Amino acid sequence: MPTYRACCCRVICDSCGHKIGDEPCPICREPALKYEEELAVTRRHVENEVPEAIEFLGICYRDGDYGLVKSGKRAAKLFKRAVELGSVDAMNNLGSLYDTGPCGVKRDSRKANQLFRMASDRGDATAQFNLAQNLRIGDGVQAPDRTEAKHWYERSAAQGYAKAQFSLAVMLDEEQNVEESFRYYKLAAERGHILSQFNVGICYEYGGEGVDIDLAEAMTWYAQAAEQGHKGAQEALDRVRAIIQPRG
Image (cartoon, rainbow, N blue to C red; front, side):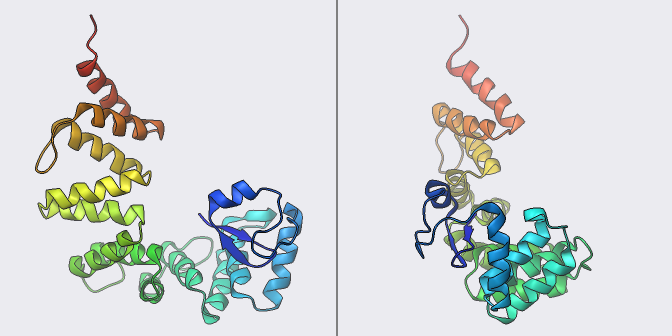
C-alpha cells in the first residue's frame, strides 16, 4: 500500500515510507509531521481543492482513521469531489463504496462498475481487477461476461497485481490451459499471494502438464503459505516433509 505524505500530498511506496521514518520528506524535504498534525495539514490541502488530500480524507472517514468516526456518506462525498478533480484512485475508492455499500452508502453495483471502468481505462490495476470480478459473476451487468473479465484480469495482472494474477490463473485452469494457469499462480505466489503459494505447492507436489514433481519446491511454497497462516499448507508441509525426511 502506498504511504500518503500530508506535507506535499504525494504518495510513496509503503516500504520506502517505513525506511524514511521521521526523516524529512524525500519529495518536498519538509520535516516529518507528527501524527496529530497530519490531519490538520490534510484539511488545509482539502480547502485548497487538492485532489490527493481530498481522497485521503475520504479514506480516513471510510476507515475511521485519526480518531474520525467512520462515515461512508462523508467518504463518498469526498471521493466524488476528488473524482471531479480527476483523481483515478478516488474513482476506484468511490466505486468500491458503491460495490459494498458500507456505513450508510446504498449499494449500487452499476455505479460501481461505471467508476471501475473509468479508472480501468486510465490504467488503474486495482480498478481493472474489481471490474473483472463483477463482469465475471455478472454483478451490475445484464449477464456475466467472461471474455471481457479475462481482458481486464490480463490488464491488471500485467501490472503485477497479485489478486488479478491469481484470478486469471483460476480462469485459465477452468479453461484447461494448465501451463498458463501455473505461470500466473507462480507470478502471484512470488508476490506473496497466499492461495497462489499453496496452489504452486500442490503443482510441485503432484506434478502435471508442464510441471515436474519437485518435493523440495513444494515444501518451499507450502512453507511460505503456512507462514501466512494457511492451515492446509501447514498440513501439506508436514506431509511432504515426512516423505523427504522419513523417521528412522
